[in-house]
Image (cartoon, rainbow, N blue to C red; front, side, top):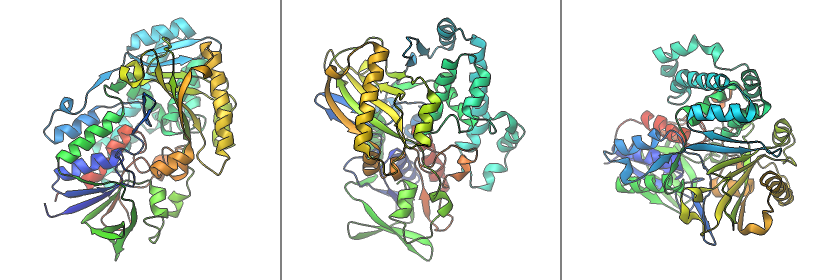
Length: 489
């Protein structure tokens, strides 16, 4: 094992890449500025309550299983999960409620009973979502968009003849209005655009690929919480001999004659045959690559939305709530206008509440719940976040009280807040944007940084800010695409 790889950042993609490259015969060293692995996928403990700090939805578990299979190990020896019976509970202030059951027949009957929407409309929408996934996933998720081999194969050719059916020329909202009669169901399916920080009134309808992952393929919950994704991959990487250097921020990527050969960290240089950057792409170019040629067009692209999260210990059990819960705003379009045009928070935001203690009882004291309470917000553009947090907290509490017919504030006995500035500080995400560059135009997939540098040899990129995008499944696929580009040791 003479050949070396240095990975910058121990986020989920960095962990997965370290496993793959170790199995390819490399000595792998991971440098992480934080004292812990996982990036956004970490945990918080407050006064007897445990919270998954960031991503809360788990889909495509086969991406995790593949990593353990590559190592010749059983997934269940490291990581266990279960399929959800209810993907999400939806609430509106007018009293309407809807449970999105994983059983499609049960879900369509629920929608027909609650909203009067015909079951065939939902089934057609999910068939369309599966169709988009079948023909676009091999191109946009599993391969590099920046290699000719991606575009000159049978799967690519099969997609070219169907390009008119992928929704490139309509928005998510337009496609959903054509598909559904009831405005609440349109709103429910528009919500999937937020899974990569997009605006359903701007982003192309190709993002209607996302419901397929949740309804057709299934939503899951790691039995030890989302943080178990991080801990299990970290354990596997350590078992394979990967070396981790925590509290070790990288100061510079060392480049000579347009070839990357090492890094500078803590006043010391470390050499390697390949350098793999898992830090946010924009932040990397502004810091550790600031002396190199900049991809100005990519760096100028608008960023995705961010999040404002209130980690609340709630001293009561609400039986109507499940793992995933959405309390919808009255005017969804107005809410997104505030986020993406006004760079503000709407007075009536949609509230997402994730409660892992539903499935993992020790995440909260008996008779209590751990509420990961989140709203979508603009990325940081210099707003007065102290004022915005106070405004948002009042709006969220009003929404919860009106929707659940309660008085929530006296029940909050633990609180911690994470805003876009905190996200940027903790995860090096440019402007606190959760998913890197925005996907609010039909060319967004092509406006992501490739998984390699076209200017600097032996420098590669993975993670949510580069191809194929943000979110756990895409970060794991990013690691796979990148690791496959690096030859065996």
